Image (cartoon, rainbow, N blue to C red; front, side, top):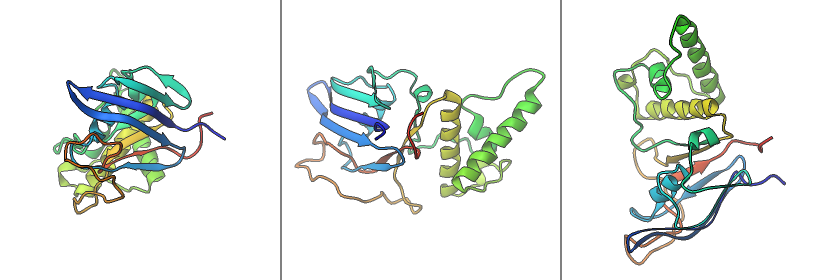
Length: 211
């Protein structure tokens, strides 16, 4: 049996005297999507920020493909962890293709046109993989909200490929109408109670195990 893509054990994080995460355990198996369900302020974003190295854990262990990651996690995208934020960070006056490549940019020098053609090929290949058909030259400002999410997903996959990682994407769960995704959640006594799950975020991994 292959090791989980991600395994968190006993994760704890406090900000001053306020606990945000208390003894959180989470396992993401290859080829699965896992949702974190909970109220606003329950610690979902804190957990994602721990995975991407923004926050350091106070206690607990992070394993990625069976290997222990030191906290704070360094170079998360190179390891294969990317985040698609609720604010997608897309520029409305840039084309779809330019938004996909805005993180790393294109190679400079005499081979710039060839590099751009390479980016176009990567964009189309990733789009076919996801069943997404978008005009790469269309301005993002002309796209529907759902289409903008597709652009962000393709950009995240491109980032994973360039980083050489095996792939774990974390992103907010939203329906096309903007309503929060629903699922089972643990009731809490107060809105700011430290949660062992969350509402409105998910982690997904590719099918298969690391070779």
